[in-house]
Image (tube, rainbow, N blue to C red; front, side, top):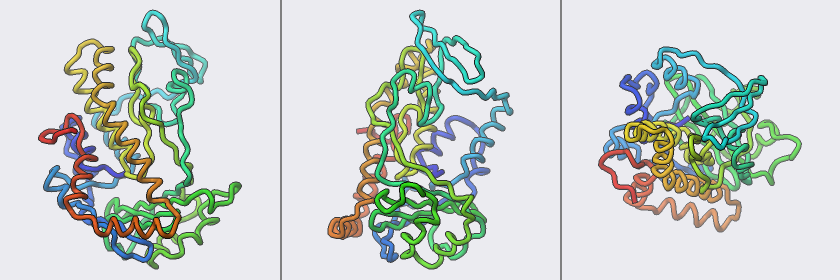
Length: 341
């Protein structure tokens, strides 16, 4: 997962620990390219360092979670599945678990991901499909890396990568469904769609074991649904899952944690803190959901003329325009010295 400067700021506010252990390889160079390797846009990563005091990083989700678990002195975590959730008239929350037990709670933080059973129990099925599929993998000993992160745009397809550390690299690919066999979503079956990529990337793909390539559909949640309901609070993908086109899903979750901490410092009453959190996050997460979905559709277009116009617009975009967009993306309510429109 990519942690942009906003997420690193939030992480720094949540813990006094030095994050250098997980920030082993700052991403200092990044580009957007055509499949032919023609440069479309240079990512303003040095500007981010100057503006927000941090470069982005790419980390393994498991490493980040384990690091946070260590900071919390390795608390016991009980695992179960919330099958059904109901709001009682007494402002209690009743939950039925997969193990068969039933419990009553004064408050709940629902952070159980985009497939949240808790959210489904309250609001129903909210997931929206997209018109493209994704594959992801991590490889070791990737050579011939010109940039720390890059993304190649083609016709109805994309390929991108980001350096995790000196030995590991994360890559992803997306492809519109119309170019796929409905009964076969494995990467080998669509491998030929990415044959125009540079030779070095072809080698990375070839050296990635098929069983280590994660294949999945892309969904998000339409913005506008409540982030809290009385003593029930939704966070992360359970509240505002966005398409991964910006790599901001995990970043928004860390922002959520920082904003919740702030709300709890301002409000001693749990329900008031939940309501404050929802107010502070509503516009931010709605904006990010809309922009991420638009970017996905925009980057997956197939019309030849539209692709030419898109690529021309990106290649001619002035630096200040790119910086303005990124400032908006990287700024949230509690990030100091930055105005929220």
